[in-house]
Structures are given as structure tokens and as C-alpha cells.
Image 1: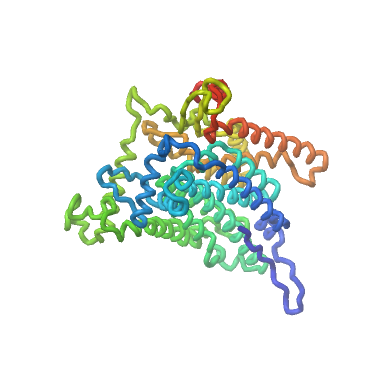
Image 2: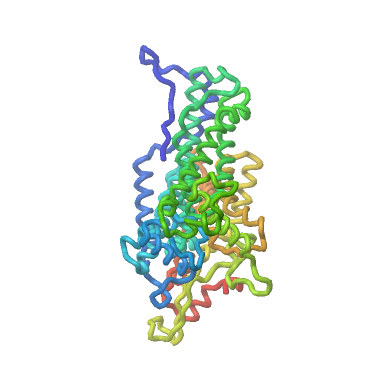
Length: 521
């Protein structure tokens, strides 16, 4: 994920000419990427391997007497149908297909490799969770221009309980989390690439040739971001929110770059030069990726609602000119939308583990995925033993969310730091839309794609504590101590929670000691 920063070319005599507007070039390019590329990749790969070991450790435990736990009971059998049928589900008797197929297709690959057993159910999730660690290290390094802070982001994500548990169950939320993070990474590389292209134009004295600024050509990283967003949408419909939010972020990046380059009309220039191609990248490409995930269903004979035309829908009518598969897909999507729109909290009888979004930033209402109690024969060293898996955000990480997000907002208001803008957009895309329908049943696992952006916000704040080398040795020592102590606290907190993140048999007293707040029970 490294953009090539273009520099002015030497003249015929081999002399590198000075840019015609050196300050503008410097402002466009900003702080350069670290020069320790090899070390950067070594850090990323080593931490990814460590995270993979943590995520895959004893992946086959626990089960519900050999069957899936919690909502695995929906997605694991559906993924098996996908594997059996060659890419699509066919359970018309229940009509409980309420999400797009990509997540279940990926889970089916794990079942194809490992079989229909607990490891096969969860292997694809664990791999996606491991790749999230690699992605966030590279993203944080690009945001901060620091290999150290990039590695720190990887450590914090490894030690995040939400990301850990989501990567160890056969459910779908870890897949959109991965694709959203990859889209965000591609956006950051595109930002650097656009600025390097504009820097060349400024250095060559061509920036004023038109009031709109130059055309920037094909932007492959922007297309990659659109493709990743399409995959997130194909994994879960909440990916639509990220398409909207990241699309706005992209326009903001482009306008800021043109303004920094000295374009006479930067905002109009963005509309003229950048928005139309962005519509292609952030609308057409995601739609194509989304439809591609349905190709096995389109080619099927027994897919749910595949042949709705002639059964639930009339053969002719005002939309008779559309292909039958498209009308069937629209009908299916309408039924799914109806399911989600009517999934309200029953008055007086809420789901025992549902929660509302204002509790999510600090993880005040986690979710119990699995619980079993037994006797001393289970080996916990006490007459009463407990095995449980709880989706819970590591408190040392999640409980600082409000001051950390407040700091990011302050940085945006006072300095308009683009890094904090980007992270807040990513966080808001996964959090704010859920306030539009408070009566709907909602659950803490909706924050799985948001967890990486919380980590990035924390890393940006820790970067302020760490300071820069030019601030002096003593300042760096103090900052390193603070950052090291906080990181150690998060890791220690994760280690304390480990038994209830993986279902280890523990005593009833230890189980009660893990539940710090009344709302956790």
C-alpha cells in the first residue's frame, strides 16, 4: 500500500530543476512515508502471524453439544447450503435468507477445506480477522507515517475483544469489517497518489492552465476502494453506509488536494474533474461487485425466490421488460428489507442481549454467545465450573472511546487534521446510521466494523503522547513510557478476559469476577 511520490524530472543535462512553487509542492506531499519499508513489512507480517495464532487458537471450541452456537445456527447451515449448491442458498420453506451471499460463500470455502465441523464453520472468519490485523498495521503506518504506531495499531486490534470474538465465530460481521478496512486503506493510498500527481503539475508550472486544475487520469486505487466497498455490501447491507460516507470523504480529499495545489476554483474543479469518475468508482463498481456475488443464484434453478416471476410476481406488467432474474432479485431484496424494517423490539419482551447505539462506544451491553455450567469433573478446580463466550470490547480500549473521539473532534475543529477527519468518518459510518430507527432490534456486534476505527483513533491520540524526534529526547522518553504503559494495560486486560472470549472452563467465582458491570450480566 505504498504510493509512488512523483518528483520533477531532470532536464536534458541531467540537472534536477527546482519546482516552480516549492511551498505548494511541500504542502501537497506532506510528511513523507517512512523509509524503513523492509522493517515496516517485517513488523506487519510478524504481528499478523501472532494475531493469526491468537485468532485460530483452539478454534473448534466451544460448541452447543456439537452444534453451532448463537447465530451460527443460522449462518453455518446456510454456508453449507452454499457449498452444496455451488454458491447459493435454497431454503424457501423458511425464507430466512436475510443477508447477501458473499459472507456465507466465504464461510463455505472454510467448510470445503476443513469440513462441516467447528473449525470449518469458523476458519474463514478467523482468516478475515487475521487479515484485518495486517490491514490496520499498514493503514496506521500510512496515517501516522510511523512504523512504530502502525505496529501499535496491530497490537491493539489483536487485543480487542470484539474483533477477537467476531473472528472466532461462524457469523458474518467480520467480513464487512475486513472489506471496509481495505476500502479505507485504498482511499488513503489514492489520496497520496492524487497529491503526488498534483505536485508534478505544480512543479512544472502547469497548475494555472485551467481554473479547474488538471485531469488526473485513471485512479486505480479509487477503483480498488469501490470494489472493496462493493464486497462489503455483498457481505452485509450495512456496507451501503460506508459507500455514502467514504464517497463524501473522497470528494473532500480531492477538493483539499486541489486547494493545496493552488487551483483557482478547487471545489468546482473537484465537481468537474473528479465527481463523475468517482460516481463510476463508488456506484457502478460496487453494484457490479454486488451483482457478481449473486451470479450462482442467477444461474440456479432452486435458489430462494429465483423464479418469483410467474409465481409471486406476474409474468408481464409494467416491469415485464426486465430480465426475470433481476425482477426476482428485486422481489427477494424487498422481502429482506421488509424483514429488517419490521425487526422491532417487542414491547415488554426485548431480546435479552439487545442494546441501543448509545451504549456501544464504551461497550456497556456486551453479548453472551455461549454459556454452560457443570461440575468439578470439567477440570476448573472448583465444584462449580463455567464455560462462556462473551462479545465484549476490552475495557482498557473501549472505555477511553469518549475522550479519544472528543480529542479527534477537537483536532478537526481547531486544526482540521485530515487524519482525524478520515477516522471519524469511518467510525461514524458504522455507528451513526443506527440512530435513524431506535425502535429496531439492535446488537453490539454491529460495532465489529467500527472497532478498527476506534483503534486508529486511539493510535492517533497515542501519537500525540509519543511526540516527534525533533521535540527532544526527554519528551520522547516520557511519551514512550506513557504509550508503553497504556499498551501493556490493554494487553493485560485482554489476557484477563481471555477465558470468557474463548470459552475456557473457569470457576463460578472467576466468571463473576469477569463481569465488571451490572449491564454485563
